[in-house]
Length: 501
Image (cartoon, one colour):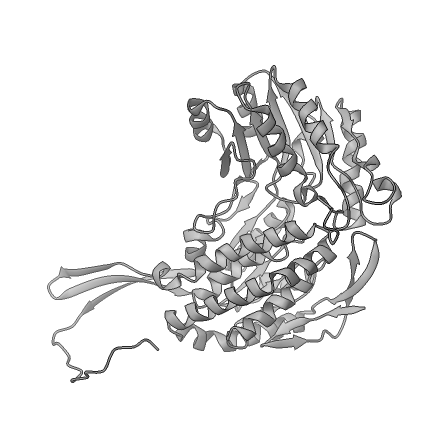
């Protein structure tokens, strides 16, 4: 049985206390254990990062970029193994796990451009023989607390930019699927990153709280549920830290009557059930504007019935299990709740056959197939609450205006989409909807790495989004320098070709 440790100061570090079980979601069996960091172990990681920071901060931008480029190549060479670890511990199918790694690597590639991203401004002669210029410098030791649903991608939203900018980084991954974090740590070392610049502490609330309270941790990035995001934000900021905390979501797809319903059905099924619906950008509500509802539901059901549910390591599988038994049971509870609230259970995921076996609720492992609830009341919990599983709610609305009102009236503001062939309606939607990331005929509008990711309202606590330019600003702070030099200096003659070191 495997034992997952911490990674501190460039090497695996055995824990000395508590452990937590790791499960294979496809079978429900225990596949290993992960160390849970104590306060002392978190402190050891922070101390290693503090010691490593000055030399890394002073390393040239060119040197940092070269390490990033090497890490990128090693990640590509090992992407299949990383995907295998994700499938084994999270449950998502191998192709989906490979896609996760690829999207994370886009941020690594963005961070490789750090010499350009950290260019400042310069104004000559602001006064007599006086110049002014701006620079951005790293914060110091920063931390990332990441969720179970994307154990490779979400950390890669954070640490490439933080490290490229000259910070030392501490990752606290989910204890549910921790193995990918250690492989990435070993690849950083192989890429030439100095010991202590990247550390991993496995753990639970003990580790989280210590990172939020530690005086040497300057900033914390978090992705997870809204209640925990709010807690992380309030606790971290009360200890003087810069915090970006991304919370939950309830993402709607508004379908106008002129939309291509085959395109909409494909998109709804793909965005609703990919990664078993365990995505903060999953489409979990379809707002069908009259009169398209009946036809659209028929198209969605026909596609759902053709999906293959099975283990993540089986190439025939299109959707895997949920991550834990507790989470599966919570998601499944919404099916009976939805019916009690007045919805019609069109597809019951509990009865979906698992590849080569019986129905989901009769198969060992944490299984729940794609579920479709139609005629979901707008005021119901199924419509309002984040379910975070393969449950697609169809809400019937009478107009564009009613659909936008429901989206804007919700607690969250993470992602949304409109499907239409009317450019004017699409433009109006993007202007009126109160959501941070918008898709027009695109069901999962996750921005590319050179833009920034994040929502509005209860989906984000803090002032900056993740990756892109806002990510660079989050992990750095600005200085403005005003200088006067009365006499020119002369360095002597050197005919050699200038080089960077």
